Length: 163
Image (cartoon, rainbow, N blue to C red; front, side, top):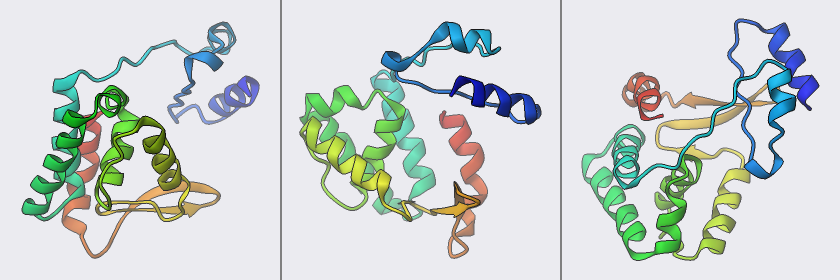
């Protein structure tokens, strides 16, 4: 797989390539030999988690009352379950929690959270606020819905600032 990634990055030199891996599957020497730089992403702390949630909800939810309700509901779940709070430091899992929280009470059990997150992740047409996931030439792409263009206009800079 390293060779394919290296070939891809050499072919598309103007496209930044980020390779992510779980620590258990990580082969640092092979990636360094292919010209990649190593970085480790640290988990969010509590302040960063709350800031991420505030920014995520400001982009994903147009209705101010619903935005406040959803964010409070998710923060309550984090406060009530240490297992879930421990997972919230991971930005991907935190995003999945925010998506799940839009349509159901967040599971308080780690295994159930993973099960639900996997279900949402594997569902075609995953939705998060004004974003719609579509396939284009075999790749998923985030598209803004035409019914709510205002949040779409601010989504890109807001999400980049969040990350």
